[in-house]
Amino acid sequence: MSATEIDYYELLEVERDADEKSIKSAYRRLAMRYHPDKNPGCSDSEARFKQISQAYDCLKDPQKRAAYDRYGHAAFQQGMGSGSPGGMGAEFGDIGDIFESIFGSAFGSGGRQQARRGADLRYDMEVSLDDAFRGKQTEITIEVSQVCEPCHGSGAEPGTGKRGCSMCGGHGKVRAQQGFFVVERTCPTCQGRGEVIERPCRACGGEGRVDKPQTLQVDIPPGVDSGTRIRLSGKGEAGPFGAPPGDLYIFLHVKRHKMFERDGTTLLTRVPITFTIAALGGAIELPGIDGETLQLDIPAGIQSGKQLRKRGAGMPVLQGRGRGDLVIEIAVETPTKLTARQKELLRELQASETGEECPQSKGFFDRIKDAWNDLTE
Image (tube, rainbow, N blue to C red):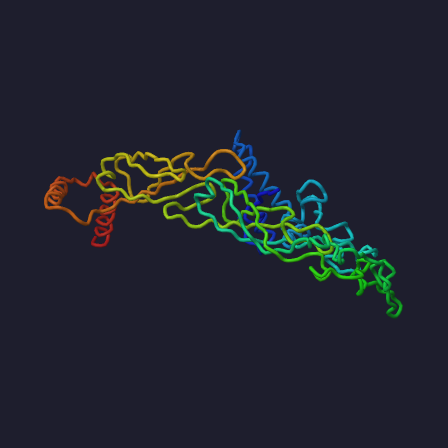
C-alpha cells in the first residue's frame, strides 16, 4: 500500500523554521487564491484549499507542529483512524507511549513495556520531468532489517522459548528508593519486556531481525514534484522481537529539464524567433511535454519578453484532474550573418522609416529630446 503525501511546509510555501506570523500570513494568501468562492466549479482549487487548510491546522498548533516535525505525516496516521491532524497516530501505542516518548519512562503507564514498531526509513529518488508528467513504475533495492526467518522474529533459538524475568517479576519495571521518593525504571535485564530469552537465536543474535536486501516496487503517480513523499506502509525496519515494522518514505527530486522549467503545474520555456516573424507575425511549432507538437501563433509586432500561454499544456494535477498551462517567453533574435542583398533590403527599410513603426523607441527619444530642451532653456 502506498500513499502520496505533500509536505505541509511545501504546501504553505514557507521554510521549516518559519514563525507563527509567517505561517498565518502564508495561509491567508493561499486561502484567498484557492478559496472555492473565488474559483466556482473548480475541483482542483477546492482540493488544494482543503490541503492548505489541513496543513495550517497542523502547523498553527505548537504541539501538533512539534509532532509533525518529529514524525512527519506518520504522527497523524493510523491509530486515531482519520489520518488527519485531529489526533496522534498509531506510532504511539497508547497515550502513555506519547508521554513516555516525550518525557521519558517516568511518565509511562507503569506496566510492561510494549515492543516498539520498527523505525521509519527514508529513501531519496531522482526522477525526470518526463517521468513526473507520465508517472511510472520502478523498482528499488534497499538494505533493511527484516524479520529473522529461523526464529520468526521471536529472537529465541528454534525449539526454545522465553521465561519470565526474575529481576522484575515479569512486570518490565523495577523500583528503587531515593530518599522520600520511589523511582520506577525500565528493567535493565529484560529491557521492559517482562521476559527473557533462554537461548538467543544464532541467526539474529536474539534481536528477531536481520539486515538483508529488499526489492520493492514503487508506483510514481503523474504530477509529482520535488518534495513529494510516497509512503510504503510496513516496508521500513522490522520491529524488534516481532513488533510491527515501520514505514518507508520515498522523497522525490525532479531533475532539471533541458527545455522546460516548472512552477507547480505550470511549465515555462523560452523560444527565440526571427525579427521578421516578430514584425510580420506567423506561426511556429514546438514540442510539448507530452510529445505532441504544439502550434503557436505569433502576433505581428511582438516584443522580446512577451509571454504567450497554451492552456492545458503543462503538468498534470497530482491526484486530481486536468493540467496546468505552458507559458512561452518570446526572445526576438537579431541576425548576425546577413547577405549583401539582405543588408540592402534592411537599408531600404531603414530609409523608409518614419519613427511611427516603433512607438517605444520614438517615445524614448522624444523624452530625451524634451529633457535636453529643459536643460538648455
